[in-house]
Structures are given as structure tokens and as C-alpha cells.
Image 1 (cartoon, rainbow, N blue to C red):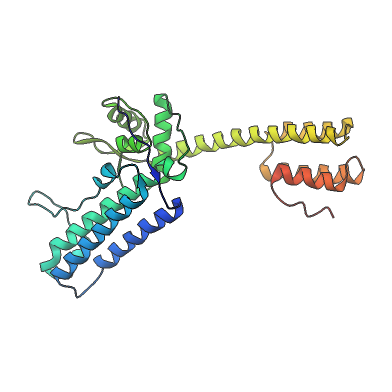
Image 2: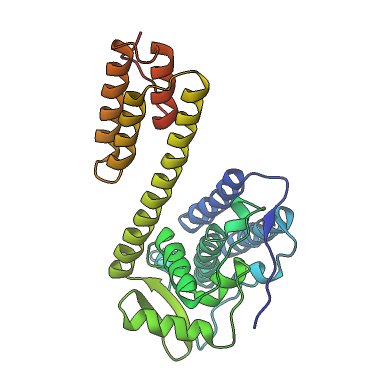
Length: 301
């Protein structure tokens, strides 16, 4: 079983941190697209970008960046590499190796940004992720991969590691194979890198439907709590008429049958009727509507 660490940001907001990384990424693209530059200047600017990126990560990520920095590829092509950069087209052949090196770094930085964007505690350092079952891990992995839907492939082991989720030896390989067989993931290389994957369209559809269902259940649960609070407050204010509670109970039952928009319109109509018939005051009707919908009630003056 692997034990990980909890990654957090220090001295910077989540938005500011990723904005800074994207700015560095944009500088890399700009250099790769630069014409009329010699090999020495290109290498110096590449080294500078690599150093600044590493220093940026060191400055803002806590407690350790060792594993994160290991994701960055700063190496040159070897005779065994077949890496080719499209940025080298129509460029001076003398700087081709430098372009290929920077392009390798660009791709590795994009992956690193992806892993970090999937790391929950960078957004909320107080978050404790409760992932206990294999099914929980499957859904978590699919939701994270869906959030970075694209051409990049990611290691399941890294995703779990950065989110401080424990896993046993070879478990990430088994998860990758299982989700691949079900059509939810696309394997990059099932032999040499068996847990490197990207989400399939089928996998994206599956997890989006499941997350939407969870969100609806959560919203309905929160609405029930709000309705209970409304009833309690109405009783305290002296509004104990049965007709009021009948109307509210009807709204509670209909939350599962109507769209959010239709339910809000029905609520508005009921509040107008109750206020017009003087069962409740205009102010109370307005407060009830705004509390339950988090939107202004502009029809009541």
C-alpha cells in the first residue's frame, strides 16, 4: 500500500497559481515560434524558461516538489528517440535539437499542469478526500480525467498519488485494464506503461451522467433542509395557517417532478397568491422565494 503526501499552495491563490503556469507555457510557445534566432540564444532562453518554471513550482507548492519536478522533461533527444517537433519546420537545422528539447519540455509541462489541476487540495487545503472502495476510485479517476479531456495521457498512479489516495501494488494497472475493457478509458501502452490513459467519449458520458445525478440528489437534499427552516421560521413568526403548510408541502413533493425553472415559477406563483390573500406578508413572501431560489423576487413590490 502506498502512502502519499498532501500537496497545497502557499502564498498564492489557486487561480493565480495556474495563471502563472499558463503564462510560462505561453512564453514557451512564443519562443518555439520565434524566427531568426541562433542556437546559443535559443538554448539560453530555453534554460531560463526551464529554471523559472522549476523555481515557480518550488516557490508555491508545499511540502515538496520533488515528484512534481520529476514530471518535467528537460532532456535532449537521443539516438533512440524518434521525437519530432513540428516547430522545427523551416527553422535553421543548427537549432533543431534545441527546438526538440524545448518542445519536449512544453509537452511535459502541459501534463504537469494537468496533474496539478486534478489535485483537489491545491484548491481546498482543508479537504479530506474519502475514497475507500474500488468503485470510488474508478469514479474519481474518470471525473478527474474528464476535467482534462483532451489528447494528453495521464498515469492513474500519479492522479491517486497527488490526491493522497492509497493504492496497493499493481492496482492502478488493474483499474486501467478494467475501465478500458468497459470502454471508459483508452490505454496508451498496455505493456510498457499500462496505467497511462485518457478518457473515452463513452467514459465521459458515463461520469457526466453520474455526477449530474449526484448533484441533483445533493441539491434536493439541500432544498429539503431549506424548506424545513422556512417552516420553522414561519411558525416562529406566527404564520401557522394550514393552507400555508399545504402549499409548502406541495412544493416539497414537486421538486422531484419539475425542472428547477418550473419549480421556481410555481414557487413564485404560490408566494404571490399567499401574499395577495394576506396569509403572509409581502416581505415574508419575498424572503421565502429569495431564500429557496437564491434569486431576486422582482414581481412583489
